[in-house]
Image (cartoon, rainbow, N blue to C red):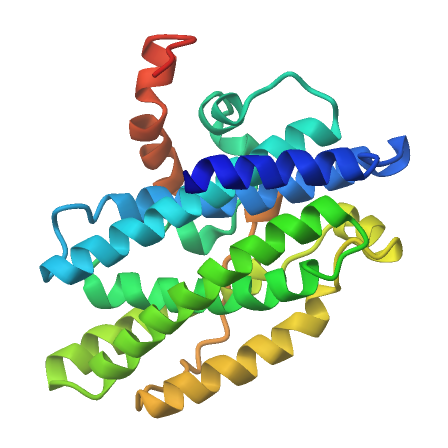
Length: 273
């Protein structure tokens, strides 16, 4: 029922607004793909926790977050296809592109690691998407604004859930603190990649579709520092960073994930549920 309602909202938004002019079609398409890819890849990672959560309630919570992200990915893939007036479905965009065609940030494709690593990754990314969707909900692109406003509600829950765990683990045993601090140190390498921009972003900024991520990052950093202070965790002094997701340059982990995720569709082309 929820999926049906979201689909109706999407169709209504789509009819209410001309898609976009030729000049910015590709920019809008690539931006929507990036949003969808981020959600799809993180959703797939969280789905790997199904039946493996540390407690039953957490197993269900992680699975539900995964479903939220899959739903967001489908909506943004649908809009991406509509923008360029393509007959491609969300399934085709998700399962029939190669590794270099994915535009997701490198952070979401990193392996789950332990529970502390997963919660830290979720917290860092959810804080980013919360701020991003808040800005996009004010976009002149009414369809994008509507989809972002819906996704924002879920991002807020994901952030609250994961940040509470980060704080709990940081103030827990010596081992739990060591594990969550290790996760922070490792994942901080991919922070800059989340805020990377290209010529597509610059084009959309000029017409008011998106906000400059340079304006979002300071807000994100301030929010993250507050959580980490409460968790008694320290941001690493290591200034190295790894980037390339926006250009389709990924870590080795994405290829392995796609092999599993795309197997059925590639083994049985055109298969439908």
